[in-house]
Length: 221
Image 1: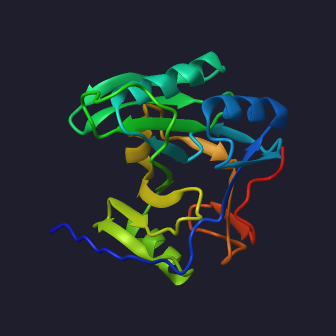
Image 2: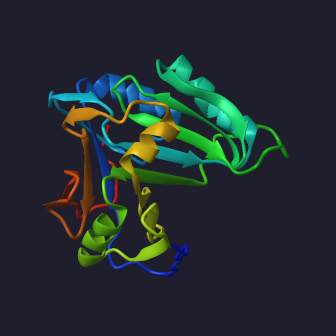
């Protein structure tokens, strides 16, 4: 099958907020403040049942390997567990950690060599949803007003976002995503994440919940 790639420069709908459901919001707030992403996410208390892989990861794209190491080391110092130590690969350099609340974070760069010292700058955050059928989920989201920015057949789809969006949304095969993160693909219960947009509320084919979010600002501490 030929690889189909589509591009777009605008999106009618994009993610306005990302809320992680955690057992201890204060502890989670301390972790994410140390990690450096507290302005990109919201936190909400929840005791919803959840086991195994929650079906998503938040991926930080940074400029160089030294910055990857800095984020991974900071996460570890704040209580995260390393799922994949930072290492070189064909596509660049990256590692995977799991926050104390259970959320999996990937930190990566396409650069293989450092061109300067480590920083705390994040170029982009991508929310990767692990889905059973990328093509079907892509069409579902197009129907909700999102615009496809890039699409690689039934393997991956990425949606356009505006500058005010805290993260970019992308879809990936669930089992492929779990393999990339170094965890078993099985999981039950709540995803423990709620997304906000002007198009909400709704639930997608894989059970990811969206709510109406008028404001892009994070919840006050």
